[in-house]
Length: 89
Image 1 (cartoon, helix red, strand yellow):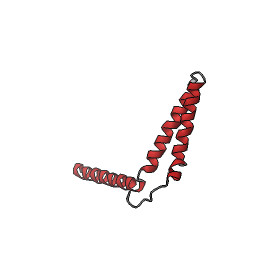
Image 2 (spheres, rainbow, N blue to C red):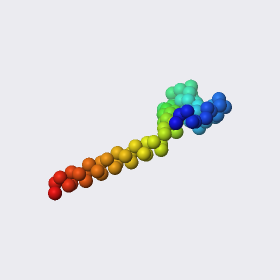
Image 3 (tube, rainbow, N blue to C red):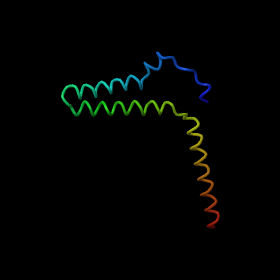
Image 4 (cartoon, one colour):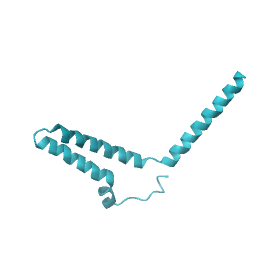
């Protein structure tokens, strides 16, 4: 499926939500350190950067394939449970 996706331009990559959020987080961390170590600004900067990485990886995941896999696992579990219930009878 990765071959079907269009290549993003450099402009789109730079102005994407995860990148901009990451920049805000780095800015908060720099401000927290530069202005005499301020714990809250640094902490929020770390949280924002971590959130931007998570957003990047969540958007990258193929959710249709993930849900199809989860449905197959659920069906296999239900089938196995039904077979075990039949064996007990």
